[in-house]
Length: 371
Image (cartoon, rainbow, N blue to C red; front, side, top):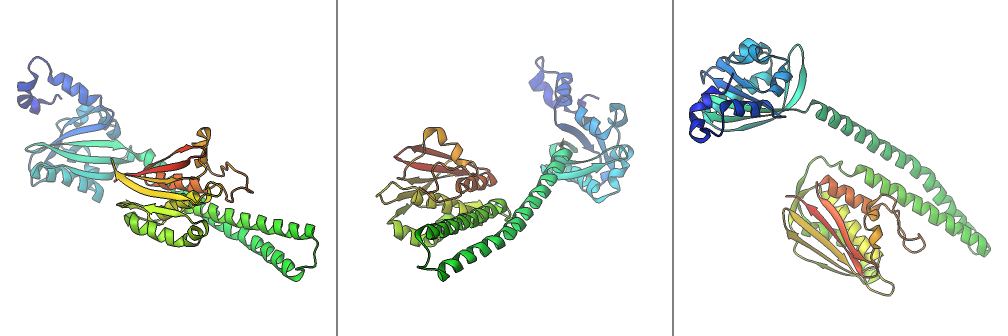
């Protein structure tokens, strides 16, 4: 059936340039499902009939045109009236037709004896008694999303259990090393002292690595976003880093920062990592200087600028990879996970992270958080 009820309204603009047949074919060939319904009686949901269904919707229903066009929903799909979800969708058709507005239903379930699935659905007003619905099958997408969420939970649980299991022997080793050092202090030769120090440093690095891996695995575990005042957040981070700031005589300049929607714990870790890096990777015999600012542009773009050692041009992308280290452990301590943390946190907020840097001239890290 052609979209005959639209003819009068379209004649003035179509004339010779556009035909109902062409418009029908356009709707019919869309990759998203489009259906048009007429609500014959605005007080009776059983009066709603199909006017037009494009190929996508006909396929989803496993119906032919002649089985649907011009017929009432109660005749074609009586099962829709038999459960709460179907009744809610049909009632939305009636409500939109009566009140003249659009309603986004989000995810809805549809099933009959041949097909079942999950769909994104919205209903829109056309004119009195007429509405159109837009439908997109997201069954596989939702299934994949649920599977990924389950896998992520399993991996996070594994990382948590593994980290705690690994901490016990490391703590035991660390305790034994300390006990030997205390018991034989001043009685061992220099080589033995160096070996104990090496073992102690190794266990400390392993403990730090496990803690960092645990932090990495739990990023995104917060249940819901909240409004975060970045001024308060950075102030708390600087208080935590107070001893390191005083030890290095670092100068931190903080501009006026915005409130954003985000995961507070993750954002705190983000600022902590970037500020700590600015302090740690400083020039020899130079006090670290760090400037923190933000500007509004399609969201908020933050910058953290330092006067440190900088990053080689060819390594600017690599630094965000997990376990990526540009320097020997003897030069700069760390596990090589900090910037990978930052990247994961920004991706969690659907933003972007990048760095501008010149070797020997410092670095500026930029990260964008959408509104």
